[in-house]
Length: 207
Length: 182
Image (cartoon, rainbow over all chains, first blue to last red):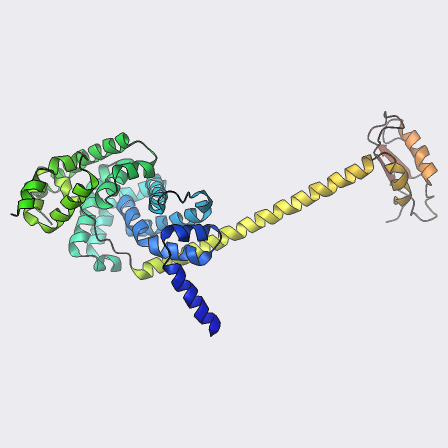
């Protein structure tokens, strides 16, 4: 009884720790801290991965890979820097790798079919999103097909995750001018694709 | 239209050009989420304003729990592999250390005098005459001839790794006695 109580207290203590402390404790082999970190960061990581790889199932796979990478690379984490930036860097790179993989290319052929199916049978996760957000997410999946992996990652980080340009540069390991360049090109392509597929939005239609 | 609408509408182009400082950027995004008139105007200017907001992309607690369970399994697997690799390294290092010690013992000056009496030949039954240290010595002298050629006790063969070495230099000699029934 005493043991159960003390374990619960320890869990509560760990839950209240900031991200960096959890990372430092996890680096020392504390599994409870690592589990807390995974639970806390999963929504952000999966959400980012979903924007980049385009569907929930693949985003979950990427999410798992991200946290396994975090566990094996924790000794490299420098606590002077933001944990979120480090985590986003791993998540973005793995999402880009995933997109580039043969499996993703195969899926891209069936992207249209996938979108239609997804529209028809909305998953449990979709049901919890607001209809507007779900519509916006689908719209982005459709029009972002022509973006390169880097352009897509930059646009998602900038517009949907609201990261600063300097942070995106750090996440992607490139210069700020490169980020701005990717962003500029991504907007140009998206503008063209929205005009082609959803011309009503050019006339100012909102969701 | 409020007063702030007029001010913020002038910053659409800066937003698109990524020239707005972070606080103003946040104010504009928040305002666009709350003001349909400004949002319509922004979309007319640039349709990519559609995505200029955080999309509520909820991850179900069950989904998080599934990912956590998969990650824990993966971590356990990684740690097991690491332990196996560590133990293999230990075994390999132990074998290398044992071989090094054995070589060192054999190469030490005077080692042959200590090694010879304890060799299997010395412990052989009467059927295979056991060489004394002196016999081993004479075997070594014989081994100065081409390797694999000397037989100190009839059935025994002496393998000498450096037959050309003088008496003061370390020698490695291997005596194989076929007379032994092991």
